[in-house]
Length: 329
Image (cartoon, rainbow, N blue to C red; front, side, top):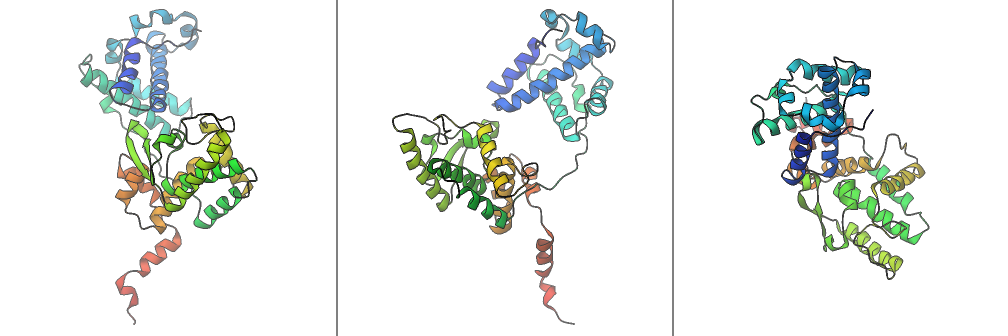
């Protein structure tokens, strides 16, 4: 079986997402994966009568553009799409959220062919509906649990690691920053009370820092300079090898401290610190949801609303704030 070779129309679309739409590399990779799977499924279904063995033995990827072009996509019916979604559900065991993501990729691709480059006359993907996704409450650390995690990091004996790791974790906890955003920060992006960052969708935004976070960052920068000596690194957060710290290194570091603090790392993770920041700001800081949306870098307030979860005590207090609750009978 030859390695999958992208047809030209898909390559052009992915380049469009990068150069024109300004999507992140991670998002483009997801779209590429989803659409390649769709194309391969439809090749097997339409050209080889659902015979995958025949497809593996006989399909010539060198000539893929002879088969997979705008005409191929326009001839697909809504039945072909639903067959693919059924395959994802029954054979791949994809969750509703994963299937929904693939539908979004298909809709975007067909909209590109229909509206942007105008190579198809009808947009059949418009008929697709997303599966219903059950809304789960995000996992987060409570205020006391957050303090316990910070105390655990402060017990680190290595001065460089302690200063770096407490600065990283506290930045997550007070800004709600994404991991990809944090590791991309350069020293030149650091202002007196903020960071300039490139967020999701390649959008630039300013992330403001609390005074104690500024203090931790400034302390780390001094120790970082001593650690680097004569070496020069653009990245703010660096590894012990004196290079920009990787996503995996940050995740492993935070997993280590979570485990030491007694938290289950199958439940709690680096991304849960973003959930924690959002929850603490909303619950204790009386942050308006529209302001929280901008702080977190969300495109829509509907995304932010998952962080406005309330526990039983919150609900009890809300009821007792009713002005009628003070009346006596």
